Image (cartoon, helix red, strand yellow):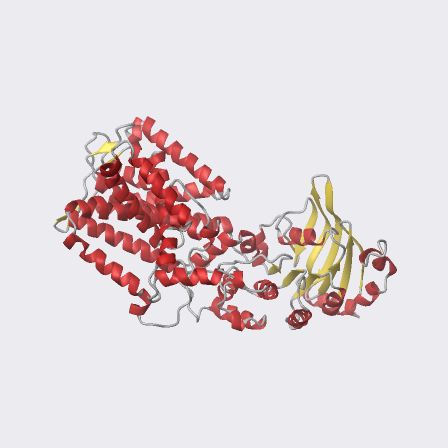
Length: 353
Length: 261
């Protein structure tokens, strides 16, 4: 669990300009992501760019729980799926049941809220356990939700689920068009990423990491450990829920397959490949996994692409238990300001004693 | 003499800081504590001595709610806390340190003490970063100073030396507005210099803060306490002033290992 325990270190900063505070790494990354649509095809914009950002957000919600809270969840895709089904039921769909036709500005926040409440409920069940048992109980919840959605036709429309879910047309833009969709995902992911990065040093962020390090001591200084953990689940649910709304706008449909065990494990793989030490990790992992899922078929054929993904996963974890973040830490250039790269460095230097 | 001091303090407050009535704790067939009766006045400084396995730490755990006693009652300043959740007891002014340091290895000293101050005040769920002018942060700074750790305020707790971790343990217990503190072998593993430091810290505590200290080192225990309870096999078998205890032959027999010598 040492890689989990090391998330969220950042040196306390003296007063500096906001430019220095953001760091060169972040600025370069932001510039690249902003001009990415100029060089990318529509396919690379949505299927790779937008989709990676969405999966990255779901994995970010896992990183929040696992990296800062020490709670590894396999139910994050279930939470995203809850938001997706809410969109299908309260928005419009082509499946002929429900589709209340709420406007997007009503159903989208409602879906995120409902997903976050479901996340808090799952958390409330899961926080009674620790370590491997948290993984098992969240896997059980995810599996139960998958089968329930698949067999229940009254609410979830069973196996086919819902299709014909359209992204909204608002402010004169159809938000599923490649460029608007990409920027929508980028904006949402940036907000989630920055919020997590900021809140990691907030009172609650510190208390969550302290609970991860020593729950007994946290009780002995007056904290209600269970309440704090459940609150972390609720916050993670907000991020996963927002990603879930974007996901159904991307796919145009939602079915039990979206929330089955395969995708649930996929999210964990993304987070581990990227690294759980810093909120950038899940996004790095998402890019790698989405690229592999897209192009592995061309390299090894349709039957073997999962094998390739598995081998790459093994290779990364074998070389660096901290995922891509750990690799970067080893081979990074020796410059850089107070951005996430120097944060990773400072962190490991301090813990080597 | 010390008894008189304790008695006069008691009259001032009207209630005992701690009042244990027949407290017992079973672990299966093992009786770790039985029939503990202990009354400690507000502001009193009490040492609990006893050999390994005498039940001292178990006594602490039942008082702080790390686990509940299987029999008896515990009152804290007149209020029954026998089955109250641990964090609720802390919010009523009870504090403790641990025999084996229980710290947040990935936070800095300042962050740890800040959390301890925040734990007994409002806005524990705040998603904003604490500003230096925040009340809890200001208090944290003064506690870091009080336990002589100014130079290590930004050091990661996991990289501190053993002695510094023991100091931080005490710092965490001083956060908020403690009324009564349980010190579980704070001097364990400390160098002679660090012991002197510790004694200075304990003696510098404000007079209204009472404590119980578990201490194997008789020298330390007798210099920081006014009254002593001797435990053996889960019971309190004698109580008295440091002088009385030091010269009690039965104590020497049990505690100083006369039977084995």
